[in-house]
Length: 328
Image (cartoon, rainbow, N blue to C red):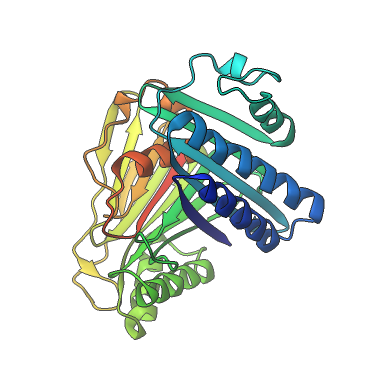
């Protein structure tokens, strides 16, 4: 189970909304009262920093629950001046805003993961609490956020991993709102039932299952790290880019709409590099991004990479989603 909430942070009332949403997130994940309070505290401090130091921005709250593991993920993002000295900012008692300076230090003590990516383009703070299912050779993160003003998201993602294989998918239901969300949910349900199949076969099953919906576009990727093999299949206007070192390659999706009409479903096999990074995204994210413009971003957590793309290249007229898979 994967779910995402995005809250714009524009004033103090936004901080309160972030806190309330964080408590709901913790409840959905089955956290006890103590851990739920910690999630709410982290979200509150992170959103307050976005407002105070970044001049506003957005907070993404995401949850993952699988095989008895539950993880809450907080991404606090702004386009402010950045943090001049991250190590100093993490120390208790340090403040540039006239407060007691306990926020960043408290985050570091409570969160199981803390990552700060900052520069002249702004700051992204990643906080995690809980534990995700262990991943041996790959790291994965996905984010799906709705059309501004909508509660339901027509984009979605999912993944499944075994000892020698990971398969992941991204789906974009046509349009936005409840009917798009219905199509995306049907695609995800089909994927989860067919995770042992090949990417092209999974898309074929989706095509049949989505006939009762308005339809969707989707991409499915299988990575076998020990064999250094990536197999990809896509239908419609999703984007997939494979990066390794200084090189990048766009993977091919065929025209069509699952559940409506598609001429062919074809798999493409590529080498999976030891330092591979694969980015899938819907057309709610512009395609003109270049990660080389972000010094140090490539070595960051996949959620930070996905967050940067959503923050800087999200279109405001559609649902948007990003899935990032990265060699561990």
